Length: 52
Image 1 (cartoon, rainbow, N blue to C red):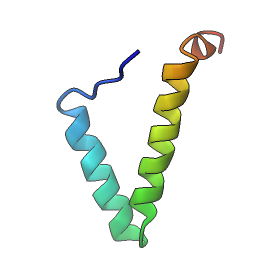
Image 2 (image 1 turned 30 degrees about the vertical axis):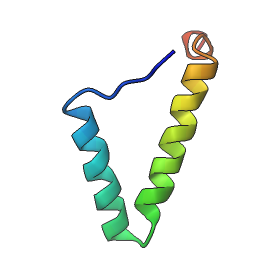
Image 3 (image 1 turned 135 degrees about the vertical axis):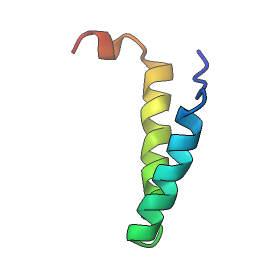
Image 4 (image 1 turned 120 degrees about the vertical axis):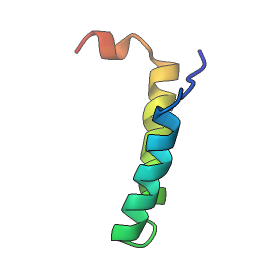
């Protein structure tokens, strides 16, 4: 499974990273790491979220 960010969500992700970095040093990068973890979880276990 591939996860593709379509416009404008790709822009929103970039803006969120910039915003969090402006609030606290490297916070945006931490946010991005958590985003990647979450998308990997969806890719590896796509049915888990259907059960909630």
